[in-house]
Amino acid sequence: MTSDAASFIAFSGEHLDAAMRLSQQVRWPHRREDWQMALALSQGCVAVAADGRVIGTVLMTPYGDDAGTINMVIVDAAERGRGLGRRLMQQAMTLAGDRRLQLVATDDGLPLYQTLGFRRSGEIVQHQGHLAAAVAPPEAVRAATFDDMAAMTALDVAAFGSDRGALIAHIASLGAFAVLERQGRAAGFAAQRRFGRGLVIGPVVAFDLDDAKALVAHFLAGRQGDFIRVDTGVDTGLAPWLTSLGLAHVGGGIVMHRPAADDTRRRTPTSFALASQAFG
Ligand SMILES: CC(C)(COP(=O)(O)OP(=O)(O)OC[C@H]1O[C@@H](n2cnc3c(N)ncnc32)[C@H](O)[C@@H]1OP(=O)(O)O)[C@@H](O)C(=O)NCCC(=O)NCCS
Image 1 (tube, rainbow, N blue to C red):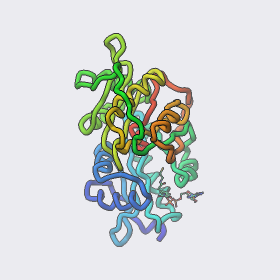
Image 2 (cartoon, helix red, strand yellow):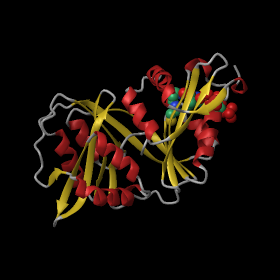
Image 3 (cartoon, protein in one colour):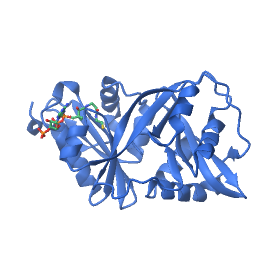
Image 4 (tube, rainbow, N blue to C red):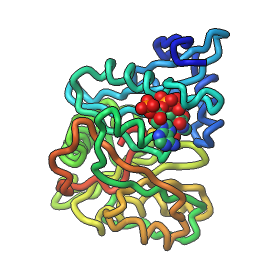
């Protein structure tokens, strides 16, 4: 089938079961709830074959009017190499309008994204496993409250570069946040929620590596044996510590921007862990 024989329609809740089948086919760990969260925060498109099967997905998650991510780009294995991936990406870029776009590329997606004008700006590593060590709860970190939301969102804007307030609020409705305090002010935060095979810790925003470790440790305390995932930048310094705790390096991806990021230096505060590969 050429991509001309497929139709492209808005991604809605009725496509979630088919989307689950596609992500299972590529061995991504997303549960239905994980797709639901992505869809709730995004606009998207599915490719539908002439017989009605959903054979491709893409989501564009907007962060205000100026930025967004493209994620969940999947084409059914039997339908690849016929232009569907390119057309799904074009649909997502149309949804994005003038927004600056970010994505995390797999090896499969990289050549396509390059031809669409995305340029490499970094690399992330995925660490996960059953927590092997007993981690002590750090004193400087406490559970966040509603009153911390504004400060945490401001830290996230400074670290990520655009306003992910809707994402932060959505994670807060599903999971837990923690704050690291200095002189009575929030100097870093971390979030934890259920995702895939277990728990994901991220985003983690802090001014230095020790603070980032303390924020992660807050959520690791009492979790020995639990399945935990953390996606971190290759150069944040967090990866060796995660490995030492039994959270092995199992993969990763290339961070790309369109247009190319003009400044790839580390921001302060720094994003030490992603909310997910989909959301950055
Ligand atoms: C990435 C993916 C969506 C591409 O879908 P697709 O329908 O095969 O893509 P297309 O047929 O539109 O091909 C897109 C372009 O990439 C090129 N391409 C695809 N795979 C390639 C590869 N392994 N090496 C080199 N080029 C490749 C094609 O030649 C094509 O270029 P062209 O339009 O100039 O001819 C699909 O491989 C997939 O679902 N992979 C598994 C999930 C995944 O990794 N998604 C990406 C997440 S970031």
